[in-house]
Image 1 (cartoon, helix red, strand yellow):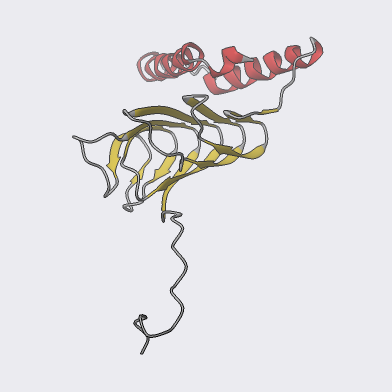
Image 2 (image 1 turned 180 degrees about the horizontal axis):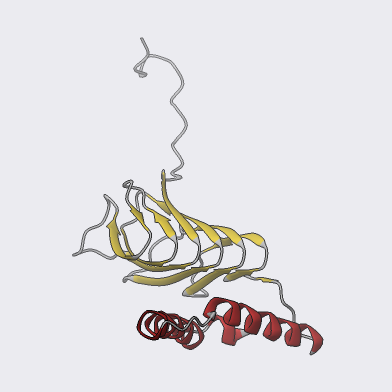
Length: 193
């Protein structure tokens, strides 16, 4: 099952799409690459099921063919949403140094929630998809870099490389979840009106 989610597989798919576009434009020959890739994926999944593999999976770092929530922990640095949907919670405290995470959304949708008080730098790469940033920008094709207000290049920060292919991702900033001390009882030392 890991082959479908490897960079090699998706790199080959994108190269085949590019070659088929060149062949179609130059030689006027239409090769249905998307149909071929979809058929190969279905055959691969069918073989996985027949040979005892599972075709749905939801773990601590991936959601495949279903919906589920993912929480970023120190255990994994790569998170994937494939043919499914997920809410990804990135509120884990920063380590002493910089954190590096990779989040992939392929043929699915995800909502990445980042806390506003943790410095975050997000590099988004999108292809045939949509990625909505907290600052209102929207990326369909290409790359975009987002820095939240807490980001300071000289201090430790969280670097997130987010890839969205044939899917959608919404990045939201959430308020910090600080616990406030109880209010002092009203009395002579309080600031009551």
